[in-house]
Length: 297
Image (cartoon, rainbow, N blue to C red):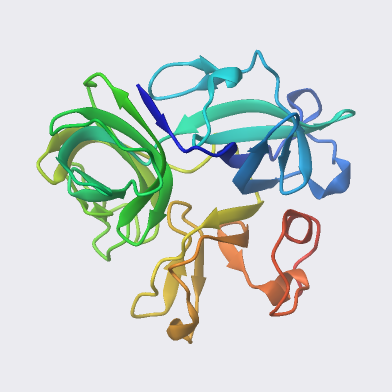
């Protein structure tokens, strides 16, 4: 059974391949698309576009997923997918895709607007009423907001061999994602605000890790427009877009809004301020001004 948001919005995490077409890896492409990417909302209607950028999404494209491969036509509203893009004569085309889930595991508690999975709270206020009980396994799509997941979609699934969580290591010890403690595999090689995917066995509010994988995409990207919630700054003023690994530092932590889902431009993992991409304070960040403008020196 799949629980979906009632809208026709498909949430996508989109990356544009650093190397463009595999058959022409070293040839620069026009339009500023090489080495850039987008994380945001994709509108699904008669045609598909992301922030006004038309995409060609092959119907026979096989999407990789922790739940098994599926066709692009089987994706549902609220799904989150990382895709690699290339520029074609017909426009920007999806070359590969991978479905992502913020958390997969057994439900501990259920209330009207929240679930608890491995100690992490899942906000399901925007989803239809859920017919779930403690012990049921679910795969949750959504954005991280502080220590909880704001769910955009949820699938009831059979028990899996492993649970998993994909998000930001939010504490200094880098051993916790959301409300879930990561144990057994040392995370000392990772830093606060790194984005990782952890696999393992669920034990109460812990995930006993068997492996950890870092990175959002299978191929390198340079410039990314990311939609997500900001973290609260730490003692040094460092903060991130949760679930991305992108970093920035501020000397005015009171100005960081961690309550609004927003668009943020980044380059090589560092968030770019509006001034860096040629915008004034009151101008909105968009696909065009993030991907097609050079940062100011």
